[in-house]
Length: 110
Image 1 (cartoon, helix red, strand yellow):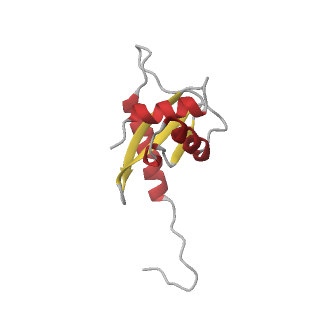
Image 2 (tube, one colour):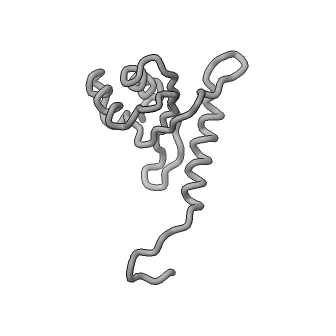
């Protein structure tokens, strides 16, 4: 398991001066997948991979999903609202699962 703090440190190296927060969501194939929420408009997985390499973090610590947000949700105390981030990450997954499936050419629906 990768620490969410490590993911956030990688993002801070890749895009300093922006806000970042990591969460996870359920993944049918892997059990769990990392999701990075960021205010950096141009941050990509490729940029994160370069930053991870520079700090000696494994590729496994680089999320495949980078979600751009206007602001990171905060609690009344000013700390990151990780519960809300998890809900957003899970909702995005549920929305993707509800999307219509396309048939492969030549196949018939089940």
